[in-house]
Image (tube, rainbow, N blue to C red; front, side):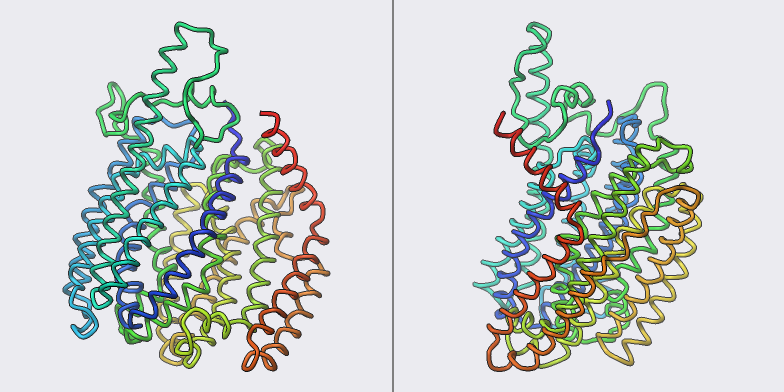
Length: 563
């Protein structure tokens, strides 16, 4: 069956963005409230030291498996894939023990004046990672069979449970913030993992009942199964293709007359794993520098993390969902071991156009963030944390971070395309490039941080992103060299949009200088009007894309009414 990967990827991205925006707004308000109850040093311990531990364990344990097993999912022997995915659990246990020991006995712990519960926090993170890894096989099945809405709903519940648990505890016991953080992490991981198994037990039970009923009744009868969380072109085709008949099928098992795992996928996983180590260093490099070399105090780390979180809002609820959906789409549409000319040209034209439009949109969004970030960093920090955040280096960090957001968005799309379409040999070669970039990034970060403080991390990250973008662009350019497709043209926005942005930059800078100190609401109003002008100029420049989106929306609405 030919699945509609573009439709599913768009649905996945759109649902992700909607739910992420809603719940990031909620957590934004709650975190601003919590910030007034917890010291910046404790924020540094939780959001830098402990969440770095979680990020390290989860990324190294599962990222390579996800990327490898999401390639050409229609060709999988699922029994072999399930066996391979269960290797993530013992691997996660090993990483939890190793990094837990390092975090407790090698790194300098925070003083008891900051928190007395650091050890509890470390082991809570390790436990939550192992619990979450137990649902990895089910997660990948949900992703592969396009359970779009269910996946997004469960991700949202995960965020909601963690936030709803942490906030009340921190209000009543602010001096035990790390305890509240630990309880929230473990509880959210349990709910997330159980959610996957409960839903698929429900889904498979109903599916088995329907298959039994179909042997006795006409196959055209309306299916008596509730699939409201599943969006497919055809529910019947999904049910016929779904290979699992009980939850036991999600457990590892011996396969008669076949290897227990697919050795090709295992080799691809190993390639992604080696690459993942380098990528993790590049992604979280500044936090590793803070943690290993103590170049900033926990209080300074807290301020940096607050600014980084605010500056990364676009990356979290917009860029990351788009990147994940794009990787899945490109990995299904473009073969790794075949040139563009030898593949289905209809698919290649669609893929090139999707890449072009993605680059165009992400570049425009990034430029808007850069322009408005220069004039509204003070106001955002003031609303979020009060006077304390705008008295120090916060505004400078925020302005610098806006440039990093632009580069982060472009790198996310170009790199996800490269990773989705590189063959094993190219991935292995790229590992050496990543190794060089990783070492260079750490050195540059250390030097610039010594010279410029927290802003040095951001500048180093910009250099890192620029180098990675350059490598990915070179790969894409070579791949499409002898074709009619020019997807990299999407990196250049239209002239009307650029002229509007330049004018808006001047207007908002004047507004910042005149209105911010004595009439902040007026300064905000100027920004809203300018943003509206920018959106209008973009819509005019991209009127064909906007018209297509409106037509799709109208046709979908009409189809829903007819149903």
